[in-house]
Image (cartoon, rainbow, N blue to C red):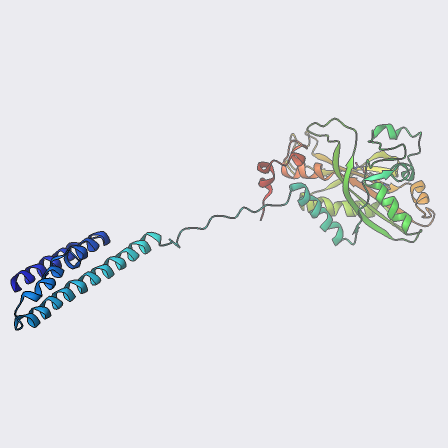
Length: 344
Ligand code: 2NL
């Protein structure tokens, strides 16, 4: 009996040793310590033993049961620990992996150019004025020396809403509004950026809706040379310090005299290229001395004050500066286009 018990113990311990899963451990427990297992069977048979042998055998059976039971428990603990370790190994996070880049947007190229222009003029003491896109016929035309029968009104085919209201064809009406509010008390020094509308067929260089930035300075002794100095600074800031400018005579109903400004070609510096069409000069904007009629209609006395005004198209500035070949790129919002102007 003792021998059988010893053998049982060795067998059990060796099987536990070899077990590699919870299921196996459980099977071994049932096989050796279960109700129908050999240890239970031996315990049950103890009654047949003599009073002398019974305690000795009882102790031995208990020892063996405890030994097997302890071993089983140790195995269970070992297997659990191994399982946890295995999981930890699998789930470790590789913190050396580079993070996923965050997609950041960037300013639209037109916004960039407009803000750059605004910064320059703010630095020269101009304020920014903004106003309505739906305008009255009076502010859009009449107040700018374009009476009802003026032929220049045909030049600017416009989107009329009613007989007296339309989508503004330039930002000048806001300049007239600003002057009017000041009741003849200068000086005025503003720029007006904003959307304007003209009835045009869209193509690579025309759009029915586009941006304009106009500037206006009114005060005592404001001269054409002041306009020239301001525009010279503008040309250098936007197209490089080496830029020269030239003014050519032109015509606008709201200025007299009127000029058009060219900058020396920033591509070929005058040697001749396709951008300046071999002339060495690129036309950038128009301006002039505010027409006395315009000053008068907005409440200023042209005998006492003078003013200069200019207007430019920021799309044209941006197209030249960045080599953009189609104005429609600005409005179709293809992210492949916009992303190219990411300087963040
Ligand atoms: C151009 C030319 C110009 C003005 C705009 C202006 C405004 C007032 C009085 C007088 Cl309130 N003039 N604006 C003057 C000359 C030219 O724009 O080619 N723009 C894209």
